[in-house]
Image 1: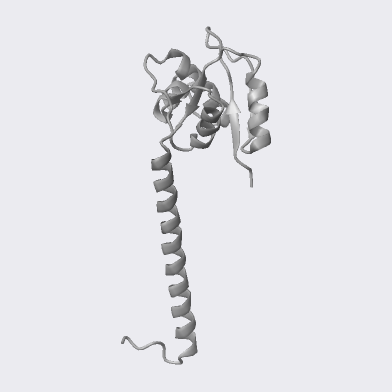
Image 2: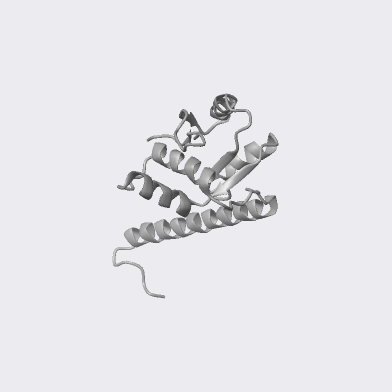
Length: 156
C-alpha cells in the first residue's frame, strides 16, 4: 500500500515548473517540504482542496503563519486537461496544475480552517464509525445465532 504524500511543484512567471518534491504526510515530510520551499522565500502557497483533503497541510502552514490560497479541484482539473491534452491524473501533474492555476487565476480565496467545523466533522465521523461498528456487531451476532438454532431464527 502506498502512503499518502505531499507533491509540490513551484512554477515561475512563464508557468514552467522550477522543481518538484514528494514528501510523506508526517512531521518529517512537512519539514522536508518547508526546506524545499525555502529556496523561494517570497513564494505563495497554494493547496488544492485546502478545506478538504488539503486541510492538514493548510493547518500546519497556518500554525507557521504561512498564508495559503485554496485552489479548487475543478480548476486544477481544467488546467491539467488543457495543459496536457489527455487529462491523465498523476500526483505530479496535479501539483503542476495547482501551481499553474494559482498563478493564473484571477480570484482565489485564502484558505481558512474553521476549527469549530473541523471539530464537528471529527465528531460526525466518529459517530458514523460507532454506528457502523454496532451494525456489524448486530449482524454477526444474528449470523451466529442463526447457525446455533437448527431451523434458523423464528421471525418473532
